[in-house]
Every structure is written in C-alpha cells, then in structure tokens.
Length: 427
Image 1 (cartoon, rainbow, N blue to C red):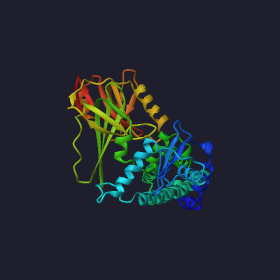
Image 2 (tube, rainbow, N blue to C red; image 1 turned 45 degrees about the vertical axis):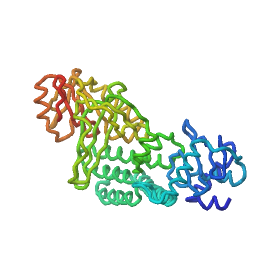
Image 3 (tube, rainbow, N blue to C red; image 1 turned 180 degrees about the horizontal axis):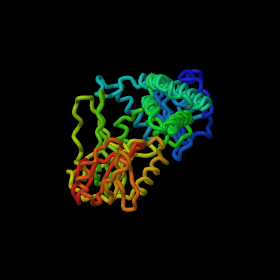
C-alpha cells in the first residue's frame, strides 16, 4: 500500500485516489500477472478506461488528467494492493497495450520519434502539470485582486503587470494562457471602449483558469479543449489513430497566412460538400522557410478524409487526401444574420474560439465609417478588419452582389475568396 502511495505525484492525488479505491466505483475490473485494469465512471457519458502495467509500472487512462499516475490509476492500484480485484483474462485493449510495451522494451534501437523512456516521459509530464497548476493558481489570485480593486487607473500599470504575468505563464509552460494575457495587454488604451474589451478578455482568462481547476468534472471533449487552450499539444499519431474521421469532398474556402519574426502560420479552411462540416488545417514554418504546398486552390474540392483533433468544437484536423482535387461550383452562403448565428453557436461549444469561417451570399462591399463592410440584401453588414484593402473585392463585384468566404473574429471579417459566377478569385 505504501509503495502505491509513493508513486503519487502529490498529496491531492493520494487523497483523490483513496476516494476511488472502492469496488462500487469500478466496473470490469480485473488483474493478471502483468497488469490490472478497470472502468471508472466519471462526469462524462463514457467511463474512464484505466490500466496499469505492473512491470513498469506504467499507466494508461482515458481521463483528461496530465498527472502520472492519475487519481484513477492510483485508486485502481490501491484496490488491487488491498486484494479486492479478482484474477481474470486480460481484455484485448490491455493485452495489446502491454504487449506493445514489452515489444518496445526489447528493441535494440528505437525508431525516430519513439519515447526512449516512457516512465521518464510520464514524470516530465507530471512535473509540467505541477508547473501549470502553480502558474494558473497565481494568475487566479491576480484576477481576484483586480475584481476587488476595479480597473480604474489600470492603464497606468497595465504593461508591467500583464507583461510579468505573460512571462510567468511561459515559465509555467502554459503558452496558450500566455498568449491570452498578451491579447489582454494589447486591448488596454485602444479606443474609448477598451475597459469593456479588457473585461471580456480577463473573463475568458478567468474561465480557462476555473475550468482547469475542475478538469476531472468536465466532459472529456471539453476537458480536451481546455488543455488545448492552455497549451498542451496532441500527438499527430493519436489524432490519426483515435480522432473522429469524416470523409467528404472538402471545398477549400480560403487560406490566411500570418508571418512574424519567428514563425509563419497558415490556416486553411475547408467545408464538406455533403456533411457541411468545417475543417481547419494548420501549417507552421520557421521564419524564412517555405510552407508545405496547399492541398488545393481556393474554390476546389479535395476528396479525402479529415481526422479531427479532440475537443468540444472539433475544427482543427489532419487531411488524408485520397483523390485528385477537382473544380467546384460557387458555394451556397448565408445572410449576415445567419452567418453570425453560426459563430454564436461555435462559442456555445467553445467560448475561447477566436476564429470562424463565414460564407456570405449576395453581399456588396460598401463604405462603413473609416473602413469597409460587406452588406447583404437586407441591409445588414459585417465590418472588414481594419486596414484591409478592398480594391480587388470592388473590382470583382463592380456593384453586383457576390459570394465571399472570409475568416471572422472580433476585429472583423478578413475576406479570403470571392466568386465571379463560378470562378473563384483569391483575395
């Protein structure tokens, strides 16, 4: 029993594991000479599938926790150490997992990308989880202080405080949160309505901090979203093996390329011709390096399968292209109100969603204050992002209504592609 407790990453995990070390918490539990396994019902629809390779020990659990071992593995081992789990034949998933671990341990040379020491990798992940938790706890305290003090005079101390917090989040290995803090800093002093925008940014940061503290209570898909927003990555191999796969003819709505001093990011937006599903292909390249070739030109179909990354709002995906790309007709679109309603739906699933593709039908470019907007037949309009040059859009439209695909965020719409009859024009 003491040996099991000694494996725990922290005291909180010991306490949580002890709470799960009861027979009524587990279904399909069993043990063999090599492993112990079982299913523990959490807050989601599906129970968490937990296994322990006794030869390591090594742990496998479908829960979203980044601690190794997690509370489910600790509870299972405590129950086993107390002699309360019966001997049984290994189920297929346990036998396959343990066999694969045994096979890897016998390899004289490891393959590229293979983890040399899975136990060490688990320990590194646990140390990172502790750093993330400590950093977010500090951030939570700072946010509570702002609620008590109010935002009056905040612009005078904003740069130093938010810069310090962003750096602290980088040290805590929570790069996603660091980026959110930087976005909040960029809002300060920008226009007359900046206090309201800042409050919105801080509220989203507070929400991610609060969600992290309740990871074990969240549905698995939402927990995956929270971890992704914090900055945990998902291995490509896991996406290809376990991600939801959707086959369709994928229309390439457009692409956005954002270069900076260190990294060039390209976002490619796809929409399924049959399913209507949205897909986002992200590509990265170091500054000065070329990006991978595009899967198609905007306005073309890419027949193939998308493997989606886990999350409450599956968007990012990997594309397996199975057939040559083909021309596509002009896509159907929405009115401005319908398009914005689809964005609101996305926020209901993922409140941290920053971007959303919109296809607007029968819109015209028109002046809007100091900038431009796309206005539909009902007179509703969407502002374009500040500084976007509308000349090419105006030339295609020539005063007539057109279909436009763009990327929407809170700053406005960034047009990517428009259609002149059935011919796609890259903007």
